Image (cartoon, rainbow, N blue to C red):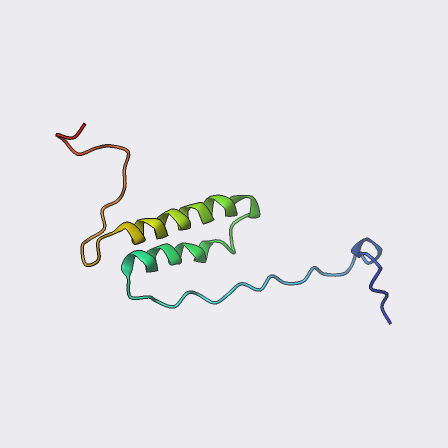
Length: 86
């Protein structure tokens, strides 16, 4: 019987458990949301320190999808203002 109190240091040959990633997201029918969810595909292959930046990008893309007018093409947000606005 294995002692649950033993650490991995006592068993250096033990393999860490495999990470279980969810299946790809099902299409929602909204191109902006589907594009944002598609960004999740790269998370599993990226180094863990990069995950925060990836999730921030996904969050921002989902906010952009929520802010978009239904039925109108998406306009990317930028730091510049259109001519004539100040």
